[in-house]
Image (cartoon, rainbow, N blue to C red; front, side, top):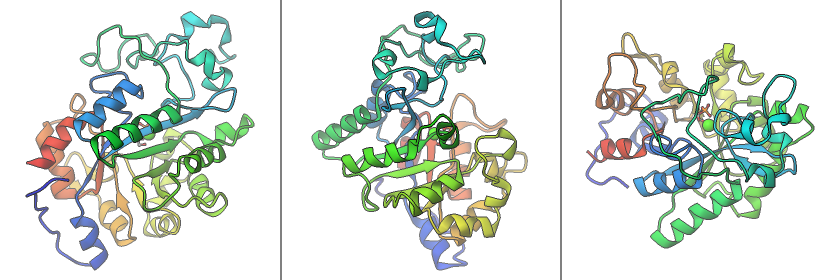
Amino acid sequence: MVSGCQVAPVKPIDPVIKSLAATKPLVIAHRGAPGYLPEHTLESATLAFAQGADFIEQDLVVTKDSKIVVLHDIHLETVTNVEQMFPSRKRGDGRYYALDFTLAELKTLRVHERQDGKAKQVFPNRYQGNGHFTIATFEEHIELIQQLNRQFNKTIGFYPEIKSPAWHRQQGVDISKLVVAELRKHNLDDPNKAIYVQCFDFEETQRLRNELKLKAKLVQLLAENDWQESPSDYDLLKTPAGLKAIAKVAQGVGPWIPQLVDLKTLQPTGLVKQAHLAGLQVHPYTFRQDALPKGLNTQQTLQLLFTKIKVNGLFTDFTDTVVEHLAE
Ligand code: G3P
Ligand code: CA
């Protein structure tokens, strides 16, 4: 917890807005600490823990043998050496899918810094070494964080994202059922535990709550419709009626930053206020100090988000920077 840090109150137009705006913002370690070490590895999660994150994010996909692994994409080639290790295992579209490999096979791969389609590092100043990083299971991440919590007497939370549930279903896999079972196995399906489950697909968010009876807190992620991230209509979800529908099943929304603030005028779009009115927390993605909004430096960006826009949490590739900012 940050002590001695008073968040300036917003004009209290509503008690719900007042209480949501007054809570200490959460620092959510986006894919671990990818600003420094390859995303979603156990090493990256460990560093995020040490840097003082409140929550550590795990993006989840499923393997051929129905294990849950922590990977941002359903594809493997942008963060691993799968093309060298299994050249014949690509699909007709030229992509290598985690779902086509057993966990034992995935464990033979090395994880490297994220690359673009031309094998160029997406963030050139990040990790440049040749360490032996590997793909980890969700269960390994759970154990790691639980053990670190026990030893350091902390309650750093989990922030798992169910990736592409509609695509997994088309492939004959019910990823949500597998994730819910894993959470229950580790006693994490509990609204009072430090865990938020997130998903871009609103139908799946509703299904998690209503059909699969998930008890843990839920966050509905918001994208742009043209990203084709899921079948959800994000333009509709951002309206007061859409936010009200989200609030029936979830505790928060996860928009990307430009949905909250016009980055030309630096004026709020009103989405935070509308979400707060619906009783929803707002946890935007993603703060990257090596990819800041044009014309803003790190401190200006963080001030804009925390002090002016009053978000309730922030996904960050650089946990240390955000923790330091909030401590000041
Ligand atoms: O889940 C929040 C944020 O991580 C969404 O973006 O693409 O990094 O999963 P993505
Ligand atoms: Ca994510």
